[in-house]
Image (cartoon, rainbow, N blue to C red; front, side, top):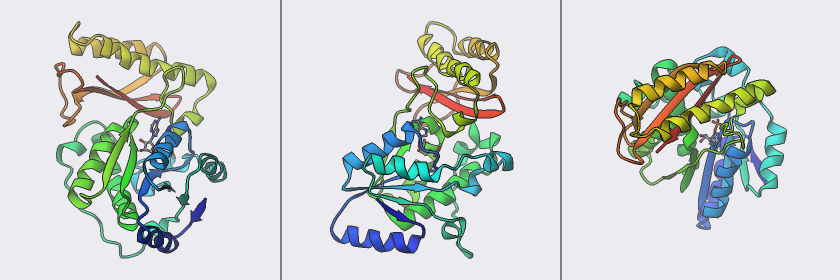
Length: 279
Ligand code: AMP
């Protein structure tokens, strides 16, 4: 597996690969890789000639300095994990390789997408996502990009960015990988105690319960019951919202089948977790 530390070395390799008409599948990550990330990497390997992963903890997308400082870094294990599944290349840049002096700020009006859910809770977060993804896409110009639906709103933001600036890049949205308990795999789970992990599994149970109540009960009372259920498991809900899965417009009524998404952010043991369910 090739390991690139600078965009110059990476671009050189990409130029060679593209001259031989090799397709590139790209998986952006912040490292601390788990089997959720690896599911995306495996798809990139299957569907392209070459799979490229980036590992970069993007300072611009952290609105909370402590969250940034505590973000796990496991680069050696990540490299071994990627190598073991047959990934072709990894790009591990330093901050000034991604944000060199004088790099222009990318303007993108996210409109309502930035005004709901994670937007107001994490001011500046999606602008940071837009900056880093624009930079990666400009350097790499991949054929396909693999994104996890665990970060549902992020998928919509990157879709808006891609439609505006990179219409030739194809986005693949991939299902959330979960522990057997239902807990969505996340690099942040490492910060939970064993008891915390057991408690966190109730998040998906609560989301599933809402989905099971589809049109059997009023949506708002299903959500209220879920918040109460979670509080009994030490989970403090920051938001639990239902939305139209296409537009992410918040809704108070059930949508047509497959167009419902219920999204949650919650704190447990001072760790902020997000999850969602689509039905
Ligand atoms: P991150 O390293 O958290 O920025 O995630 C990198 C990519 O992996 C994003 O597209 C995430 O949505 C995706 N991802 C993270 N966790 C999971 C999971 N449990 N299942 C599937 N994809 C995931």
